[in-house]
Length: 56
Figure 1 (cartoon, rainbow, N blue to C red):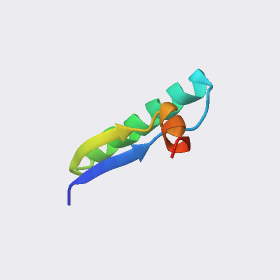
Figure 2 (cartoon, rainbow, N blue to C red):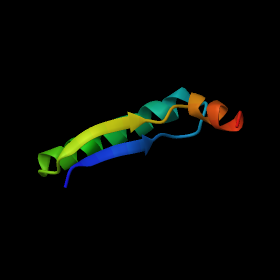
Figure 3 (spheres, rainbow, N blue to C red):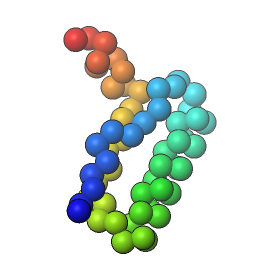
Figure 4 (cartoon, one colour):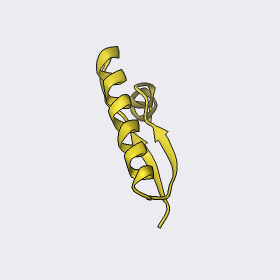
């Protein structure tokens, strides 16, 4: 079954933590693809998404 990662991110204002999180998440996606999982997409949830949610 195809997979789309619809939300992935970390709520922090520390650039080094965000960079490490994204690096590890994308390495995980790459491992899934190598293992034969049909990954069709990956959507990164950015720090700015928090501001969008708070305005509701």
